[in-house]
Amino acid sequence: MTGEAAGRNAASGEGSATQAHSLTSRIVILGCAGSGKTTFAHQLGERTGAPVVCLDAIWQPNWTKDDVPASRTLIKDTHAGETWISDGNFALATFDIRLPRATLVIWLDRPKQYCAWRAIARVFHPGEPHRIGDLAKVLRFIWSFDRINRPLIEAQRIVHGPDVPVVRLKSNREIAAFLKSSGLNRIARSS
Image (tube, rainbow, N blue to C red):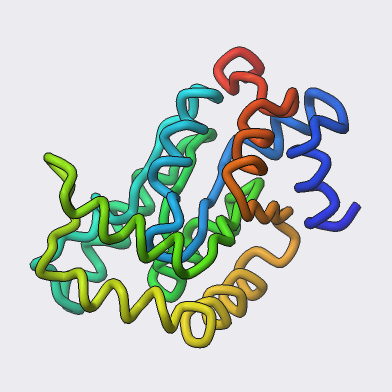
């Protein structure tokens, strides 16, 4: 079964419980800024019982390239377990650590306008780590994501996780269906 086919089976609830468990034990969630990666990761974590690792929370805003080794050490530590949901791209800095152990990649393929709206709205939420001062930079990132970042992320995904199944979710309806799918049994119960 190809990676994309296996991922579709997990989303649709097809396949055995063992196959579903193996697909949902170590998940990498990818997507553009504002696509809802963190929100989805937490929803998936609640549904499966797997711990959520948010790469934005690991990488500190004041860090520089000199801090990459420390960041990689933290990423190795947080991805050492048998179950996790890893939210974030950071392809060049982390895919060699995360993808060889991943059992499923989920791409949130949301339209640019949706991502931009979410990026703008989130800076006004209390306690939100994203800041209004960074908004122009984030919006430029969103607008150029498909042209610049997506090809880089896909190339690194193929290098470091060519056999990892991929599920692409493009709408709230597809996300809701994936979260409700019978293939997402609580990991804690099936471990």
